[in-house]
Structures are given as C-alpha cells and as structure tokens.
Image (cartoon, rainbow, N blue to C red):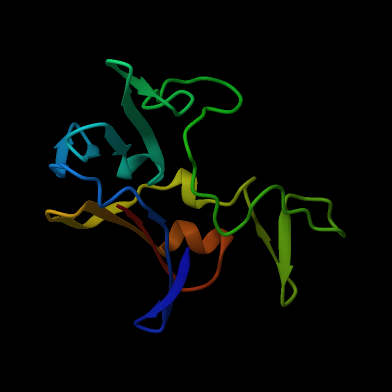
Length: 165
C-alpha cells in the first residue's frame, strides 16, 4: 500500500500482486459492469467498480476446477450482515464514535460529521480510470473522488485510487 500525492490531493494505491507467472497470457475482460483480470492459466480476479471498487472475486484453478476464494463473491443480493468480498474501508475502519454525542460521527473544528461503519468508500460507485495489459501483467485502476455526498462525511478534497494487478 502506498500513499502518493497527485495534483495536491492524497491518493491511496493498493496493489494486489500476482504478476510474473511463467507461461501466463494476461487479459482483461469487461462484462456487465464487472472487470476480470486473468493470467490465462490459474488465477482470475474480479472487480465491480460500481459496487464500491472492492475485490469481488478471486478464483484459482486447482485440482482440475475453478475455486472461488472470496465469501459471497459477485453476490450482490440483499443478504443481511456481512456480505463478504474484500471491501475498501476508507477513511475509517470500524466504528467512529463521538464521545460527547455518542453518535456514529466525529468532531472537526466544532462541526460533527457522520461516519458510517468502516467509512464510506465501500458504498460509493468508483470509476474505471485505467487498464493495462502487457506480457508481464494485467491491471485496472479505479478511482473515487470527492463529491457533494462524500463531503457530507469527509469535508476534504481527495482522490482515492486502487490498482488491481
């Protein structure tokens, strides 16, 4: 995980490394809002930008069959409780509790801002801003940028990027 500055805005970049496999034929496929990266042999990674930019699937080919490793991968039904997948927890992890009001919020310069459990990044659509396919890897980059809704929780300019490679 690296924190970079871009246009004077903080940018968080997460790399999920699986590049450099021998005999790999890296590819990127986009179908029905889902982006799938593959090494062409035994690993597939799926992300759904509109569903919080999270890692939505991780499959490996093992013992003659594909096996999904992420709980409730690509299942975006209305399940209650933990819905699985690998959510991007930002700008908070866990609960943020204002000691004075006992609300799920934080105080900044005398103003109380609500903060959802595990932050808000997981609940907002992300944009696909880049993809690259070479003989050594395939990658996609997603971005969440501040907007009117995010400023309700986090009153700062930001650009959050995640790269799946």
